[in-house]
Image (cartoon, rainbow, N blue to C red; front, side, top):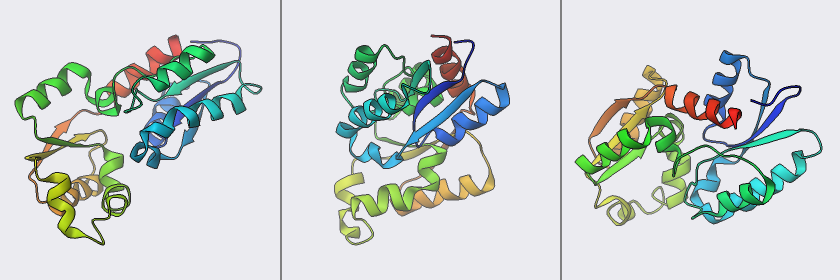
Length: 198
């Protein structure tokens, strides 16, 4: 981990709260700078937004890291990191970060028609999924979007009654059974620690 100054993490807004919890718990000299979580509905925009924010922060921080996985950018986030000498979280997406790549791959292999929820996605489902996909206005599109899914798996990071109720409501909204995989924040903590060590 860099010494002698604070570290900026340009973070996915969907990870920002959990990253903040970990930073506070560990006492790391890190400032989280989140980007809008709805960028995930437009992954082609993520790299450009990461680059712009990293460039704005460059005068204020000696060290900047990227709190994103690839996130559907098809290598564009990696290219931004390469050009600026930045490191990012490992994995293809936040599901890898929370659950671990092997554990997630096993869950998806056992049932390929799995729709994944994180705590953030469960709590924001009406906004980030229902409204963004137009299901509030056109519920008949449900089968177009979710017809090939067979279950919802909630990667429970902080399992509280409120988040569990939101995960169940999300699964019910798209008409799929809910299964819970308790992942905690350990995977995210390991990835963040490895990121800061780089």
